[in-house]
Every structure is written in structure tokens, then in C-alpha cells.
Length: 84
Length: 84
Image (cartoon, rainbow over all chains, first blue to last red; front, top):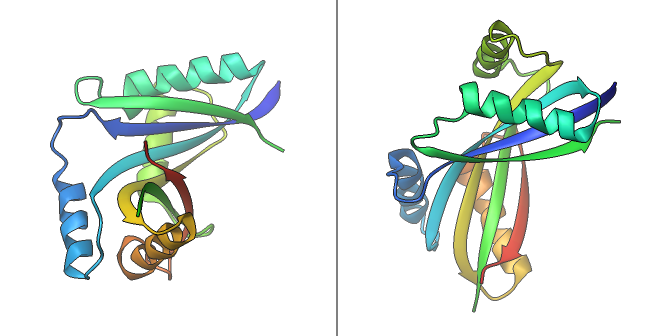
């Protein structure tokens, strides 16, 4: 078994309204920052032991599907790296 | 001016309790997932026009300092890439 960290990034699908991101964007503009757009995402960094990087990714994907993301409104991506 | 996307990742400093991440970890364990640890982070992807990548990073850093992160409890990191 090898120690991995799987990073699951969960974003709203494009077209889904994000009032929190919109509020943050407006607050930045009120502070006189100049920006074109702002998107928010949730990231989960999961430490796990697995037989291979593929195995770690498969398990992280299952976690995303079952709990971390809502497939109706979210897209997600997964990156796996070995932990030292 | 060039179009950039600055990605600001905001994490709780180590040692700061994260009840939301703890709840997520327990929920995954209740679903019989096996994991060692789970950390949560907030990511802000900011589209902005800037004179240079350094300028985009400087402005994203100021946004992090003034609004996106709370220096008492958060660490943050910034990555800048050109937008197509």
C-alpha cells in the first residue's frame, strides 16, 4: 500500500447560479478591485492508502459521486499524487 | 493588457479546527470509505486583465489579504495563468 493524496475539486456546472461567488465579486468591486469574473470551488484533499494511483483515483471518484459532489449541479475533477 | 486567471486557494492553518471537514470525513467513513485524513479548502478563480503575470498575482494577493482570507486562521496560495 502506498500513501496518496487525492484532490477533489467540486465546481458548479456552468449556468448554475452562484450567489456566494456573486457576493464575493461585488464585495471586491466595492473595494475597488477590477475583475472580469469570479468563480468559487470547493476542494477536498483526501489522504488515503491505496494499491496504486489508479486505485486511489477510483476511490476518490466514488467519494465524489456518493457524497462530495451533487451530479445535478456540480462538475468535479480529481488529481492524485503520492504523499511523502 | 492580457487576460489572466488567478486561482486563490484558501486553507485553514494547521491546528485550526475544521468541523465541516471533520463531518465530511465521518460521513465518508459511515459510507465505508477508508481514509486517513480530509482537509477542505476554498478556491476562488478570478478572471482579470493585467499588464503582466506579476501584476495579476500582486492584485490577487491584495484581494486575498483584504477579503478572501482571514490571516488569523487562513493560509493562502496563488497561481496565475494566461487565459485564452
